[in-house]
Length: 145
Image 1 (cartoon, helix red, strand yellow):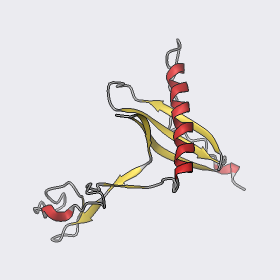
Image 2: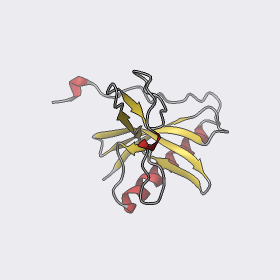
Image 3: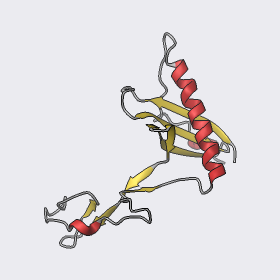
Image 4: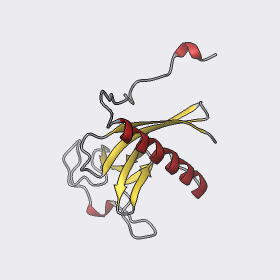
């Protein structure tokens, strides 16, 4: 796997733990968006895109995040025992959308993303710096054959 490109959008509030959002292109063919760079106790780490875990209300069937105390559709009180713990006893509130499946791949992604972050951080100190737009799409329908 070749990491063809990493785009970094710095977060304006650098006092926050969230330092940047990234997109990563693999093999010039596949893009992973919404990667986060977070300042943890051991330094920077990469958090892959994830979604909030949810379940359905037993009264109306409405979908609700696991932290919800009341149904967003009907207002019914939701059971408190809906959240389950993983094997390490931690509450699992998010599920990865995309993630590496081995340590070597995780290290390759972490190294490339942190390197791109540090480069963007240096560029941001230059006069006339303009942050990139992660929402700008390089996709053009005419490019597909």
